[in-house]
Image (cartoon, rainbow, N blue to C red; front, side):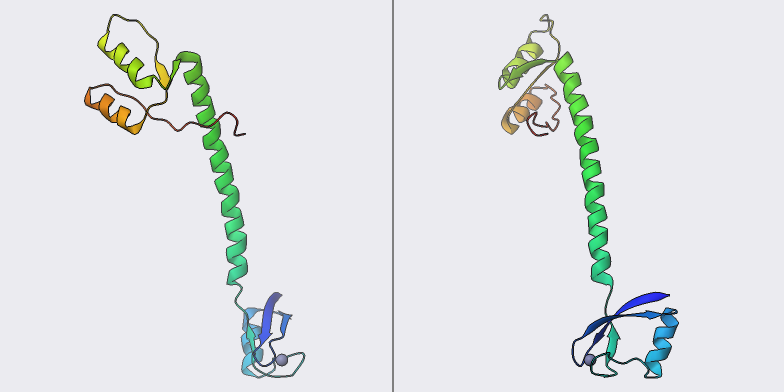
Amino acid sequence: MIKYKLICKNCDLNFDSWFASSNEYERLKKKKLLNCHKCNSLKVEKTMMAPQLINSKSKTDKKIDLEKYNKVKKTLKDYQKFIKDNFKYVGDNFAYEARSIHYNSKKKSKGIYGSASRQDLKELKEEGIDAQVIPWVDEKEN
Ligand SMILES: [Zn+2]
């Protein structure tokens, strides 16, 4: 059995109808046995099911996106935890600290992390100082 949503082009009535198969629908339509429940017009058409399919698909996509997002967020948080445990936080002084480590090779330092502007990163790169940029998840955002 297959259920189709039908619409009457004459009076705009929407109704559901059951058919043994999609072929049966075609057969009945050809034989002009499909008519509107209200006005008996033969101008009865299957309505497109597509919008419904699109809706349910986008719902699934959203769910997958959220799962993906949470997974990425979890990875980032683990990454952040690793960085926090192993690197020194220098805040906005990142560019300054990075230079001081780079130019003072005797200075023993564990890695640093902090924030730097795009301009800072560009200048650091030109000076041969490699900085990794990672997306940072705000702690408060949970
Ligand atoms: Zn009708």
